Picture 1 (cartoon, rainbow, N blue to C red):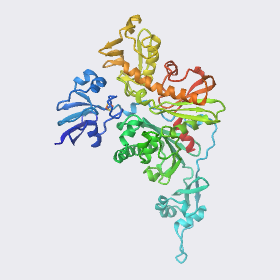
Picture 2 (cartoon, rainbow, N blue to C red):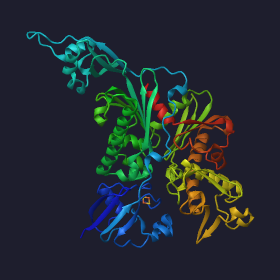
Picture 3 (cartoon, helix red, strand yellow):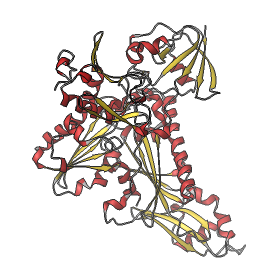
Picture 4 (tube, protein in one colour):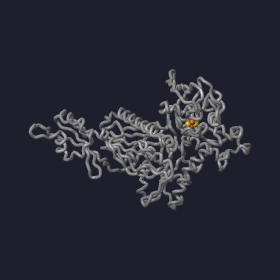
Length: 586
Ligand code: FES
């Protein structure tokens, strides 16, 4: 017999309430997702994070699983918290979903200063506007049509006109005696009519560059005539509630059209929100956006198009398609000009996507006379190495650990996250927004590990030196503890830096960062080896991506995240994937 699951969702005085009828034996997370209730599942329901935690308000919490104890700790377990992905329902219960961190407080990387930083570029978006005077059909005995008259004026054929243009055509042609503005897109020697607007709107030509990352989505509005960046919006990828990393996302959609559809509608919904917001902020009408360039990894690309990504997650990790694709915006229900061209850059492989192509374009690594390396650090990192002679690329899937997931007290770069640490005779922290410490984000963890390594708290293998702690300065020594079987470093005690609870770094946290670091470092090392490029031949290493811009280069060097190059040969290049997309818009 079904049991009732009541879920309270949202914060404030009046959280929303849903009651679902659930078959016994179902986990709370599965039941919530099936019922359309958002519960964040950063690790994809594997019990490796705390994002899906719920608090029992009525009904008996089941005995904690080992994952509950490890991830939540004894205090939260005692207070009735459980990981919803591990919690199997046997009786009717009421739970409260832990409030997610507010999106606006995340320190995500926007699009940056735009393509101007790249120096001289030739603007050729392919979008052209011309004002024409169309002679309307007048004679009954000489039948013609609005469209034929229009095409006669611009010298094109019916095959070059999208169906959405026809809907507003009679009105546009008759509304303004001064003429109409015809927008065309030229590509591959062909021209296509994208819009016909009454009056003279020739100065209004805009494009969007969209970078869909596993964790964040950045949309940038650019003026096609000048190349100027007008506005930029970034948000968390709303698909993250179904899994923080790519493999979790693929597992959710694998051979399940319903779940694939959920992921697709999530991202399309967000893109339309971005269009709305960006238009509101800039005063540009959405119907004046005629070109959209989308970059993203292979999985994000497939999901956006509604293509099953199942085989991307299975050896030999073959994508369904790799070629560049152009389609009308109406096919994706994107609320810009209906015939606007949406251009998806080509993919390289199952785990090297269009975002890597965009990074190559933005960094101009393919034009370089010397060998350079671009490291796009993120949940699904990529490494490019090469010069104008040849380019190599590989994926370096760091996973969400560097974004705070799978870390005992990890969190993303939001208000209250420890983003900088220094270690001398004690541990000192800085938090984002200089507010009370809530947890530690990726850049804070890397700083911390570098500092602990220097101080001798962890050895070169990453082992926390509990046995050797007596050699440490007293304050630092007191932070190194053995609890049960677990080695820990107490980063903050309750009250320190405003922390409400203890924030620790566990031995397992160190191992998680080592795995993430290993993915990136081995990606770089492997490409160097395959290409036969020793460190002294690397002219420059460019750090790109949302994470890359916040990590301290010194700390990244110290823990071996990036190869040991002289500091002056390493530089930040910002959100290169978004920049590459902007270049393609223009
Ligand atoms: S622990 Fe449940 S989703 Fe990560």
